[in-house]
Length: 262
Length: 262
DNA sequence: GAGTGGTCTAGACCACTGT
DNA sequence: CAGTGGTCTAGACCACTCC
Image (cartoon, protein in one colour):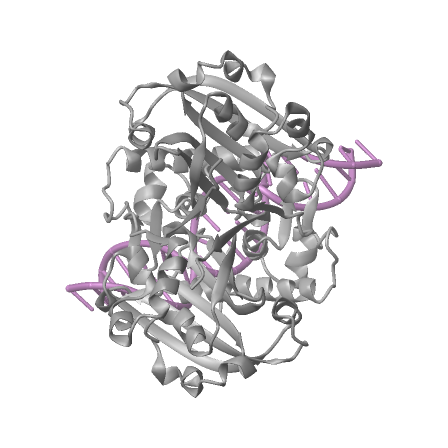
């Protein structure tokens, strides 16, 4: 076993034994750890890199290496979809009270900060195929970011696509100033006479791109979970496609599948 | 921008431009890349480390650095649950034909290799709470591994827990030699007079532990997806809890949520 | 400016792969 | 055995944070 692995194992054990509590700083790389383990800087850094990748240690340039605090997990359920559908036909003051994310997290609207960006886009191969429209068809692309009020980085970046010609029947939907829209996308679709029949979600995990690392404030070694949500209307057509990027270390998704009775 | 980042960017661009095709070897670290980029070995290795983390490059000790081939993705849907429930009451020869994994992947039984390990375990805090039994209650723990016949490493490790006293009514269920059980867990429960009402799945992603890296044959930077599946019977009790570990870079999970009609 | 982590160098030696 | 990546060293200098 390599020396850096032994050092990583030793430090991991000492952290788990409580020698340093979450939030506390580890001994400095130089000179403390190098002299304690009688090794060179590179080796100590390689060991710390392992722990950082595992999410046990936060490396902070200029300040030190810290034992990582467990982060507040964000739960997302698929019950939100039925909940949102039920709410879509409620009067506006009911819809305004709370959104699906709050429904999932148990938080109130004031705990969270949203921002929305709208623009027009052309259907890529991929999206055109799902929407069953020609490549290049005009789409409305909306980018949503959600974060905790007391944190800097969003825990959620969503890109939502709708076919432009479908949405333009209600000009309010083209206006970012109307966001956050009370009742969410399902209410927006309701104003267009569209009812959803089912929602399909595909989940994968992968290492973040450099941009995502920046945008989501990810630490080294944290994967992103990518969720692609496709909403189908009652005629079986895809009406909204949404791609959500979530930090893997703090996101839990819950899916409940009811089964038919014998 | 650091020199290693510039080198990583350059190499990434050259790979994407097709200078080396998937499966091909990159120039050697020493002396090719160090002299080409006029830098030291450490710096070249740091750059390659970035690309390995992104999954673009496979580092292979003693052979070289290779452009990674896209891996065969494994899809898992939640429709499998209803499918498995329907099949649970079929005659044995029907059940024997194919399992849920083949149903998802479209493969046949002979493409896949299973192995099962049985042992007794005591209910941890966590599991006891979900099963609503006292901590320490005897459980049957079963560990399943699935891999492609032509690959070395499993793409799936599952730990399944059942309450021992519930299962022992059918002694065949305690015998690893009976695996793979035709019709899966839902048929096993059926032999005990248990019908499932719904299945809840919680999904997270995190960096792998050292053990998981080994067991799943993961490359640097690949996250694992962890799926905890809880099966509830028609009285609302949790009857099976299963923890599945999947390599994040080749797993896609699909969940379809049907919505009630207006 | 003092303290701390981040990058980089040049070189040595070890470990694995294939002939 | 030759070729290739993996680990390690000792030391220099840069970049960030906080006083």
